[in-house]
Length: 465
Figure 1: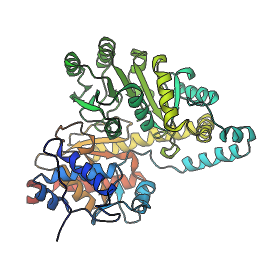
Figure 2 (figure 1 turned 120 degrees about the vertical axis):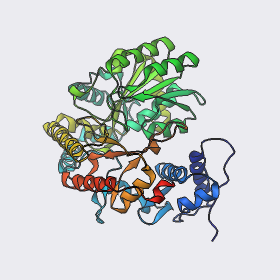
Figure 3 (figure 1 turned 135 degrees about the vertical axis):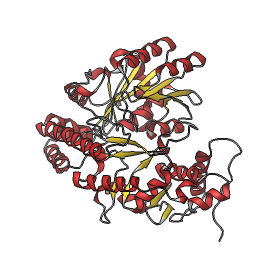
Figure 4 (figure 1 turned 90 degrees about the horizontal axis):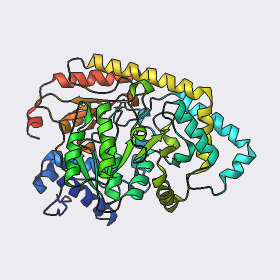
């Protein structure tokens, strides 16, 4: 049987070349909607690469939206109507086949999210002035009253912010893209943790930027290594998640924050501080946007606090960057829809938003404790009230095979590959999104399945991957 085998360039990162080839084949209709990609081992043999390389390529193609993986069936080209992935994106927590999905960092489900949104939308429907404003063009930076409300909310959460420094965005990912497009030029270099948020990697690729991976340890980014990199050729921008790295969960120490701020001053680069992964104030360090206010952009979003579907966030920026950011946003989509921003501003003003956040903080703390008790004896990392947990696998076990074996037992997790910067080899580890399970009971079931699999010796096929 003839299978699809791409022609790869002689140089470059192999998994990315395969993912790019998949994208091109879909665009050219060489791979038709609904068509099945070759089995990973078969394609790896044809291309002379490892199965892990093909697995990582398929994962990257899925992240970009070209294909969708179906547990037990294979990987398929997305249909034009996106029906293959509609349930993947909208109802991952409502699977009827017993699958427990811990692969996306979602806020823990709670009926108050939809109920509260319904109430504020009903209020808006009765407010003629707000409805009139919602159908009119507004400033690219957002309605002044909305910026005041968002700044007040962020300050209440322990992130002091002034309305004049705030730009309303369509979520954290949009804020990343805005920062990269406004402050860099194609071909320039930026830096990030060697394991970092895949959204940064994707946005940098679209902006044609080279991402340099900076080593990290239990105190977060190795800022001394960043300093050596700067001495050779400073990056234009450094992206960092100082309070909890995604995926590992490490926190940048206060000493390293001060050193990073000093490096930004000395070598004249921008810092993008991503604070979207929410933590209670007592678990956060000194904000970089306070240590280096003239060089730092701070990202925040409602996604991990209220609801991801709202797609409303905030980008706090120094005066020097605001005009460029506003011009970039205006060129992209003119403005963020004021109707959704109004809904968020009304929601955060209500007491039930505080009730929801208090419940979520307690719930994530309980889930972290449950995971640590269940995985006792394994080297794990994560924050006490964070959404994620990082699990290095025991020696001899390979993450690609382990993820597949877990999927066969109806538990979905993420390996390290999507988080790797550049050509760095992926560690044999898993990211577990504890927040994504529909309940603690479902999480406990998934964790017990994970522990059972960890106790089994690697099979011969795992050892040859």
